Length: 107
Image (cartoon, rainbow, N blue to C red):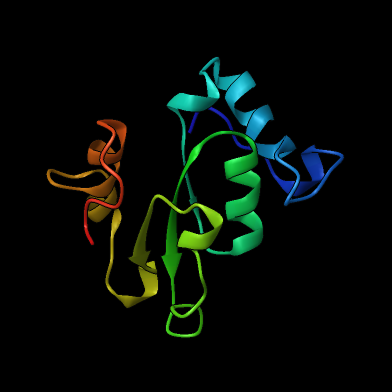
């Protein structure tokens, strides 16, 4: 990875978008070209406040949360349930389709 930023690297915590704005700045990428992978409403709110698209990975415990009501662009089961990186970036994966402007291509 070219840039790694942890909570200790920023002064404001999620749902403030500082961590995502900092990542985009350090990568030299516009916020609108970024896709965040999150697992919580707090993280989703931070991503959307940074004007980034956001894919939610959910679990059996969080499947009923209203992620779409908070602006999620797509949802996937979390990685512990067999979803892997190819489901995100591989052929027919969520990220390439989101970058083409399709909302929730897997629903």
